[in-house]
Amino acid sequence: MPLYHKLGKIPPKRHTIFKKADGSLHYEQLFGTIGFDGMSSLLYHLYRPTMVKEVKSAKDVSPKAAVTHNIKSRLLKGFQVRPEEDYLESRKIVLFNSDVNVALAAPKKSMIDYFYKNADADELLFVHQGSGTLKTFLGEIKFEYGDYLLIPRGMIYQVEFDSEDNRLLVTESYSPIYTPKRYRNWFGQHLEHSPYCERDFKLPQNLQTHDEKGGFVMKIKKQGHLHELVYASHPFDVVGWDGYNFPYGFSIHNFEPITGRVHQPPPVHQTFETNAFVVCSFVPRLYDYHPKAIPAPYNHSNIDSDEVLYYVDGDFMSRKNIDKGYISLHPAGIPHGPHPGTYEASIGKAKTEELAVMIDTFKPLQLTQAALDIDDGNYYRSWME
Ligand SMILES: [Fe+2]
Image (cartoon, rainbow, N blue to C red; front, side, top):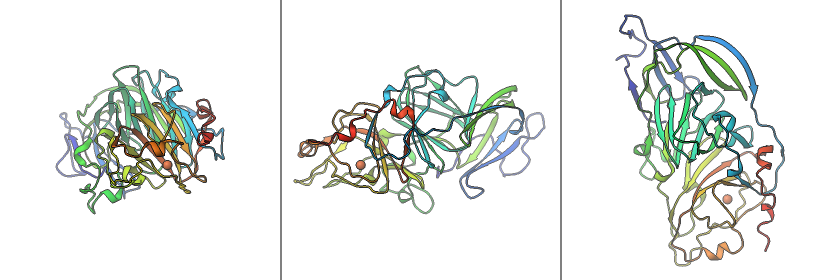
């Protein structure tokens, strides 16, 4: 996050004596990214963050390809993914490549008896249904329908849900997820033409410091394996921190659409960037206002991207037979476009209520069995007249 934030108590000068009430020292930790070149935060713990008590078993949770070479357009019925009790078990990877995993999840229970850290990837959660609190060792973020939660790699967290009715779209990125560079000035501040700005971000608040020793299970995802470690102190023992490396939230409802006289290309919807894929938000907006404008998109052949569109809410002007939670996959190599009739029907319309999240990957995506299980199977023929 290209802005400075701090919570709790920190010493006035970094790397200097900072004592607890009993006279002993706090334990400082630099929590950085990209070696020492990326964003970082400085944390102050009650206990050493290195007190590993036990290393237990590891489980392979890497995605397995059911389709490695896909050229079919696909339609996945996302809400057919069954709810499961556990947050991590509920995450079903449907699409992936060497840069990114896209998963659907319907977790029922809050994470209570363990902590989780993804050491492989930044995580971007999109909250389609449900609300609750993202609890991290850097503070808490309340979330609700429409929120993106960006959790940089290495953050120790738990998710607390308000109910059992939750639906998440989970993106794991092996390269950092940033706000687009073209939205920011040289200092990192979001510019006037950016569709959102710093005021729209939900920053961590309510830092909770747990002074507890014992046995605390942490599940750490590393190299596609889920390792289970036991730590001797509570992972949320930070008394204060400051810096730039922290999780944050952003509501899709705060994305201000950019519109024009004629059809605007997908980059106007861009919300996040990585060096391997982009994330865009399609939100309710006024349509193009040229008197002869065709609001529906033209057929396009984005030869270098697989396009994943996750339908959240509203009407989807260029598609037929689309419901909430559906995912369309339009693979690189073949063109795609509006369904028959929708192109003509869009003419003269003043606005759209569509709400969708798009993930465009620069490398082709593979499909897992979990994807095939919810695949409509006939979508690739849906443009036939
Ligand atoms: Fe497209």
